Image 1 (cartoon, rainbow, N blue to C red):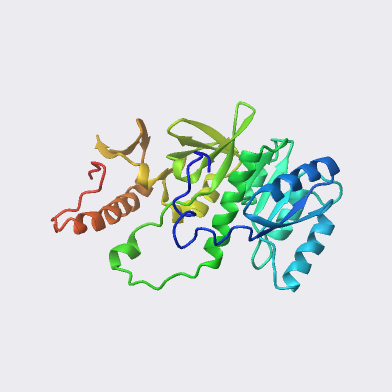
Image 2 (image 1 turned 30 degrees about the vertical axis):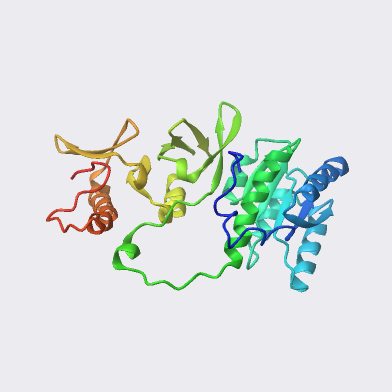
Length: 300
């Protein structure tokens, strides 16, 4: 955890200790000293039971297939990027075609491939030399991935309001470029996205950063997380909208002080989503208003 505080999910009474010394992981690096350091840190983590170590991607595939054939698939792969022959990015592409791809954590001395790693949906991206506390964060994310995959969904009665409400934003971590430095932000913290040539600029409460991605692709990928297109140049998070304004016939949204235009093409769909999002909350308060009002003071 980045805060250093216990995770309320991991430390719950139904989970505490259930994953201790249970993770089985694979470490891949062509440089022996770096591989030895990584293996040492992984074996020092109380949540990891077994570490396989190999020096190239071909050997890694053999280990992964052998584990699957034995009915004991590995829980994650810690993967160097710059390797001779099949490099880490190539191997990650191969793993993405598995029926159940293992989570991939890239471990590299280079910041440049971070954007491509994001496109491959890597769980995390560690820079060498790896710090124990930073590695612990990656293992924490793996714990959540493993628990979610092993915990069957409990059947529940779903109301119509719950069916129409957008899903919660996930904990995806995204590497962004800012002034030649790569930093990592959570999807839940992104307020809106702005088209920026061949890149997209992700805006949060504390700043912004670039990813090499088209707005159309991000719209499709993050739709289930509550993101909606409002303009050819903007994608916004519904949960971060403060106001919906109509002035002189022009519609706009306010997000954390930024005023963003809403095109006529997207206006009706945005209104419908905001009303649909607000209606369950209003009904839960016991009222049935004639004209539902979106939350956060948003009006039509």
